[in-house]
Length: 145
Image 1 (spheres, one colour):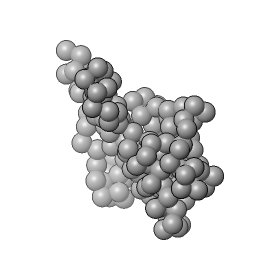
Image 2: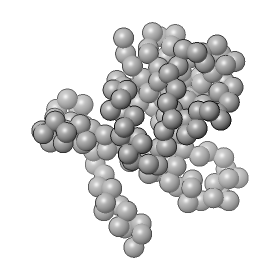
Image 3: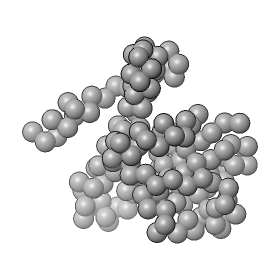
Image 4: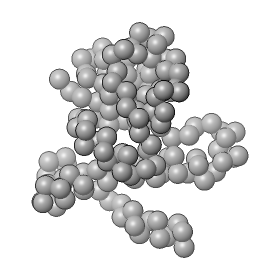
């Protein structure tokens, strides 16, 4: 059985994707920054709420992302967690930037972590078919100045 991780499963698109993957026979895990406060309206409306394993994760916190990726070992990862409100993006541009770019970079760094923890830097490229292309330290230095 394939295992999928949907980052941002509490949103509308995450709920529909979770239902589709469940219909296809996937084991579905999803994340929310605060599952206790999230409504999961779409998952409940589609009858999928009790069939998705929900985890707390903050996509902009690398240790949070890494811990969950190591726990779940998903075959497929879908990142739907970025802030997508046009109005809010103008009110909070830095939060919008972080929620989309930093979270994506954290998810892309995961294969490098797998390779390094296995003691074989080539493993990520050989096993997963790609290697991480982001140097988070360099990006952070560039952004901060």
